[in-house]
Length: 486
Image (tube, rainbow, N blue to C red):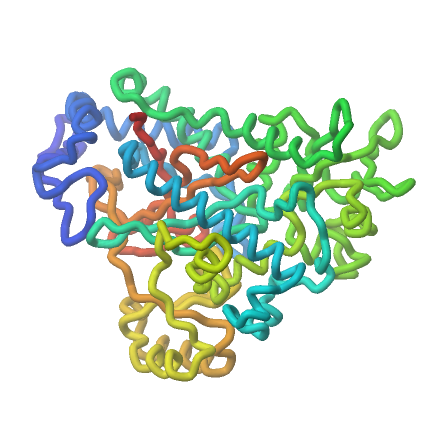
């Protein structure tokens, strides 16, 4: 059906949820009860209005410079994050269960990182093999016996969640070094509040705009005691980094200084910042630089991004760093498979939020299974991100599977495999039509005086029908995530 302007009229009444868990509809023509107020508003829009608002929202994103960088792309490196105007909605009770599971997970991961760089009880008790930890790319011997403030290592975490066909939530992976994406959460909400103001008045949607204040409070909690006015900085690799928009955005939102490595120097036993009035002591660094590049005196000697001597000042407790150095050991996807054991070992609790069932290719029997079932599995490199280093067996050709099998056999420690989940879908406006597209969710967790889970998170959406790859570098976009209040 077309409008007088030739534009297709978007109708949700005939929307087909398909054989997936749909976040809006239980079945064709049967919306979930909490979606009905939003659905009424969408249906009440004049012909072509939804697409017009979508175009306006995307233009706003362009105007504010909400970009990310794709390295090696022939289409140009800097792009606007695609944004879809139809939000994801999560009821209060469901969010409360996710929140409890995430808090449990972060607490156990923090215990694990502290243990790995301390007494190594979990290794000595045979819960996790030593060789797996010591061969992890993010494991740093230089971090042994570090004592971060209050014993907290993972201050800012982005944990990726997915929902399967039956509605069950799973943890897909943990991101504990420099998780990105929160700036899009905040900007998506700003755009949506101007796009659907009446819906925000009708629905009790939890706000997200307090993230920067919670983040600043988390960082100030790390400052050495007794300082009347601690100095916090955001350390960025520079304007050519893929997440530079976010670095500058968060610094501006918190009211702190954005610095590069060349702006900092270790002098008189402290980390100091060059200013027009001379050197100024820095007390807390929110680093957006990977460990390898943060201190050329300890890690990569060719790094031009970090600060020589920073690790020693950090070890002496004269500056705090978030996230702590060495947290990347828990980003390894092989180590991820052991988080349920960590929770039982450190907390004495059962898992509240399960992992995706995972095959470890370093174990011969599991490797054999993976190699004989590549057409059914998703195989991932232990340390790649952004959708790279991954094989989706159901969508790969026979030659692609054979080539990937050789990679796995050459380095089995570096690979895990998981069943191909039927990721949940959300109605998405593509062109003039609304179609179901697969999504994941990255909530953000802050660990300060207590653990705080920011309501909602970044819903990433595969904006190609049928695609399971939600990463922005692979053509994915984002949606606003609405968490309803009680």
